[in-house]
Length: 222
Image 1 (cartoon, rainbow, N blue to C red):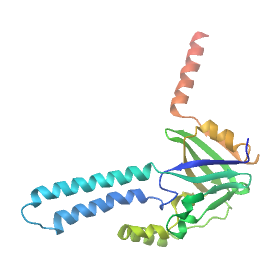
Image 2: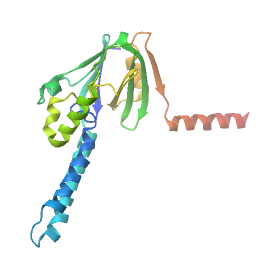
Image 3: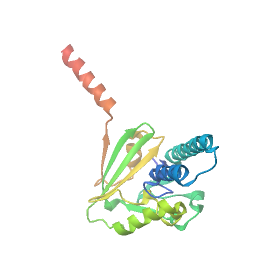
Image 4: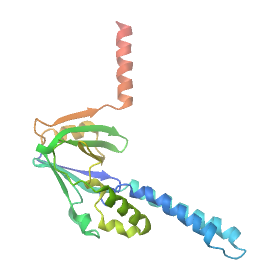
């Protein structure tokens, strides 16, 4: 087993701030209001407006699909800990924040929770409560979100969502990893993590159902 494990991260969180795809419906709603209320073209508006809204909706859905299915080299685990953030040529993307990385040292990690997903595996990283993390100011976060809604290009000045904990009590990171099964991920991380880090694999509902069915058959046969 090597001393380094790398995996692909699913979604846009390695590049865009958390929740960025959910802003697209807001922008589309604004466009609809502008076309319906503000813009008053001549009589051809009766056929132009539906086509314009339909084309815009198709573009919005396409953008959402692209963001949800993105894959980036943004996860590495080794003997020092887990490193989150873009790697290699991907770090040349526009914006200084795109080149940031977050290192989660093993002494700060309390538990790893792995769950199977259709795309691969979801990894929850729980840190100790006294771990030092960069806590975001709620006021600044609200201001940054509003600015991103008004000026989408502002995202290049914000930290990617992958580098920020989803919660702070205790600090918890959630990573979506592509093309790896839950058991494979556990076997890859177990030699790298120290014995003090608990690794738990959450069984899927299908595996639990098959287990119950198997035990039921054994009980009936007995």
